[in-house]
Length: 271
Image 1 (cartoon, one colour):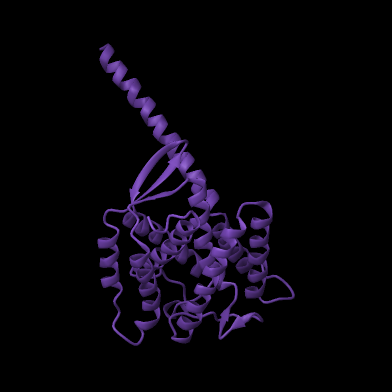
Image 2 (cartoon, rainbow, N blue to C red; image 1 turned 45 degrees about the vertical axis):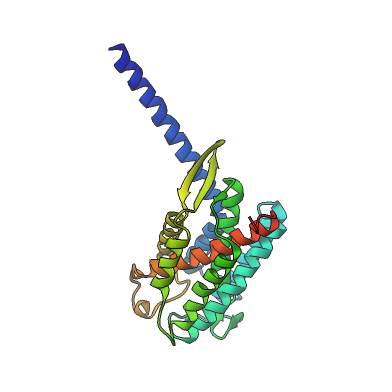
């Protein structure tokens, strides 16, 4: 009887510890998502409460610029992280201009700060992914196990990114690239720290997990009019689940760029 009581007490302690760790992990993730949260809140507020003097898209640009300035000023983001985030802003903006030109989606509202039909604020939605990765990397003390060499990682990231463009004219090789990702990162793990206890996760699973949550975020963004797919012109509808594959690939590109830059900075690029 005493042994059963001891086992029951031990199980309760372990359960409480697991709940505590899960809560702390969730809190650190929430802090890492500060920029995306501001983006979604701004989309919702400007949709419900029209602001004066400027079109909605331009107000969003000003809000995101101020948020970015505040995060660097307050120390929530470093200047090195700002450089990475700016790179993602440019990469995302280039992709947006091309996709809008091809009719994949549109930005139907007016705005002064638009390039080829794409509002400049749109780049911040890609930059927010980089912001999350940089924040989570630092807060959870992320490390990589069995990370592939540069000669493999860089061409893979480039191929995934350019396939977003070339599949409109040539064969879509996203599933071939996804297969390559599984093969290349089969033995790769990401480790992270929660309350000084280290955990690990298969890197490929982390890609899928982040991509799925971005798809959920995409549905929220389109609901609040961040952009519009052809099927959402008359009435909003759920974004097709197939878009998860695109987001997973985009997450892979984002992660590979962030990880490569961090490895270069830490002098691990040739390891």
